[in-house]
Image (tube, rainbow, N blue to C red; front, side, top):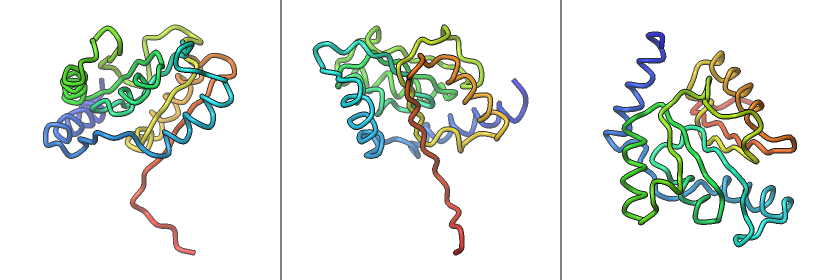
Length: 164
């Protein structure tokens, strides 16, 4: 791991340790995406749902929990060990067994998943937190792990306003 990536990981660990990114409720746009593009188009019902989802940059687990509670088979990855520890604590408080949600400490640029494993992938405010080279590698990895016809939800957060 190069020095820039190590510093990025340290910054995220510090941020989660300070509870700067500690959010409990899922992002509204992600909820809309799941309802519009996954549930309706794939005709998913909670009882029959075996769809596999990956949360990139899963943080303290708010989207993992939302997706799990809606019947999806969920995995999450994050570069912050502190975020993963928080997610595991929250899962325990919610009485969700560790085996039910797979959370891994790894980079998004080289994920240890089989090709075409996931039906959809979500990424809330993750790609914009990395160098563009790593974002490109991450998108290629997502393409590799998504099943044909799979969906990728991604949103970007910016504090820059474009002047009209």
